[in-house]
Image (cartoon, rainbow, N blue to C red; front, side):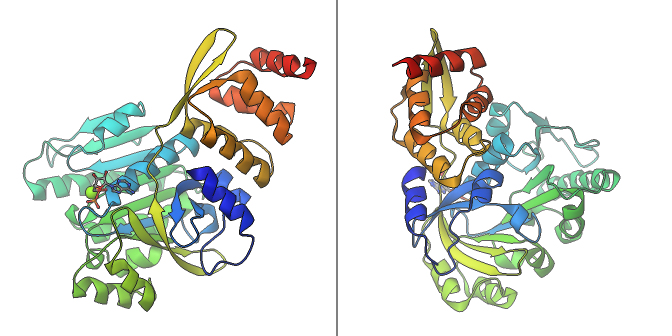
Length: 363
Ligand SMILES: Nc1ncnc2c1ncn2[C@@H]1O[C@H](COP(=O)(O)OP(=O)(O)O)[C@@H](O)[C@H]1O
Ligand SMILES: [Mg+2]
């Protein structure tokens, strides 16, 4: 679970090859992705420390690309307050988008302009009703051209406000041209582009060179390895590792603003559906582990306290009492104002929190 490895990170206060130990900022600003293979440390992707917010994902069919995309979409949407647009070829993302309260827009043909104005929130362009793959490809390209126009109309602002997700990018007609522009100019407008595809040679070098984060899942075939080594993305040893990766594990390559390139292997952890029943003042409220993580990440507390709190929830059973949680927070030494902001993030009113704090103090 998250907490055990965070614990390991705390204890392992040493330099660990190129595996990045999580920093407080990463936990707050980044999204949780999974755990490193060598030291089992939690890996938080914090694009503000990278040269740009773009991500490329490569790997053979079934290696875990879409699973990673779905987890990232969930976490980005829930905790980073960004808008998301997904190009969805087979309606694979429809349920996820609906679960998050978003819009699924079904595109019917080439003449159809599926996005004219980028709406806020989460939107997927569902291309599954278009039978002809070349028409689906053109429709997706047209949608991205509109995105590109919207981008040019928006204000210059590097803070990421839009995430554009393109799974199976090789299906996109003339994709190098459309994606090239989004990759080159996206950063200054706060647009993050995430592209996933099966073959490394599908991703042209400009896109690879312009994605500060690349996830390489299992690949096969000498042409892929040749393309991988000529891209300079991974070192020789890491390319060997890619050949034997299991489903759901990948090599990560990061290009930081300090011009450091890091490569390490990560096991992807899916979005957690663990949830708790929190009871207080006669109310029973369902809260997910992810929304708890999100509320923890917004608290102004030190890393050590944050990790203790993660660990408390990780180890706790599914039924929680408000007094029990507040008791644990008091033991950690968390201030009253932080407790109130944590619970208000979850939707618990301030009065109930205050009453619980007083009742513990009296004992
Ligand atoms: N990290 C993971 N943990 C658990 N199951 C995974 C993981 N990654 C992939 N899977 C499962 O493996 C299958 C294939 O993954 P998928 O992401 O669809 O592969 P791809 O998109 O690369 O073809 C799916 O059923 C998915 O749920
Ligand atoms: Mg897939």
